[in-house]
Image (cartoon, rainbow over all chains, first blue to last red; front, side):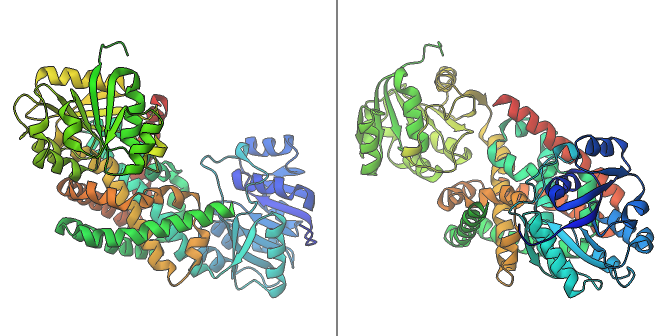
Length: 294
Length: 294
């Protein structure tokens, strides 16, 4: 991307799949990349492969010299870093951006950073089934939506700077406020995870008395249950920072389910079909658009 | 399979994906295959490709001369055929087997066939996203479980005959009674479909006010929502012949969901993690077994 974005000192806090892939994508757009992680193995991995120029367990030292800081950690770790330790070490005009999966708690914490720090909440809509820096992928962000949520520390210049950063990753910046973001991901990501986990819990309970449930389960079950295999610590972190929006979506889901169940039990085949047809149509249209964007 | 199964006159009623694939798999194990379908295009397709030796719209004529009859139609069509028209045309000792997705209504209808007809309910756990005889696949049944449910017209000899037929297809026969079958598929197939459809309905409702729901939805949503794109007529047929079992599973699902939601809203991260971890483990173990069987 020829948008002129360049970091002198880019600090990436958290050397996992997301931070590692970000380092690879920014390699040619930063004079120096510092990686921060408590895990010595992750630091050594990043250093040995030239993903970073230096690596340290010391957050303060790394962000002290940076003009761009990316917080690539779980949501509650990011919030804690923003609240407790990082503000006084950041230089004025530093761009701080994060990649946490929920945004309200994070932009609230950003609001209390020192004036002069340019902080923007971020959420790239990408990932992989397995995490860890070993899974890093140069093209993880490419062509994927990257939501940007303003905080009270987002100046107009910081917004433009953040958009240029996202474009440099090859991602597609989409700006929206944190509340709207959190409602949307509750629907498209956290609700599907809970449904998937609950489906598996339901079948596992039945299968205690009859293992044929597992033996006969096939492709439809596989797809619907896949998210249940997500990392539990990560999902717990995400759900617990988005409880209200998730509860609202669950209420909506229950209402829709009750409507379909009522038609089913009443034996109203015609109306059941009339309800299911536009659902099918909506899924097919979305899938066609989604595939064409990839 | 060298189990000695051979049909003289095999009648396949219904020339869609399932019936067409069955014709291909039985091609070398039957002296003559007759196809029955009301759709002239499907009949011509099957004839032109040599999948069947003759094709007709006349059910009675085709089953009249058959020693093996396979009913490859939607559940309610199969039930109607068994109840209304087929019995008096079947010869004594004919093996009648079906491939409908629910079994109780079908084996109940089989019970009223004339004494001397050997009828067994069947459900192969296989399929494809798109139906139609053009999608027929020689290996569709190969290595897949094929449930066999006895009816009041299943003699011990008919059981063995049905098992040999299933093995000739390359499928894995699993015998169980119809009630148990219908409970299991309610859990592993019909519940996942309803969850998937309800998820899409929930998101579609939100997206009426904010199209960013569709824009940001990604891989997790894609997998969880895939079943919502299933054929509505087919799913309506299946659900309406398994209402009681589906309602029971839905009640179980709601209970499990309420448990997880209670922990979430209470902010009990520890217990939520403790509940989600064995779910994750169960999904991972099942997926490993499932993949190793394929």
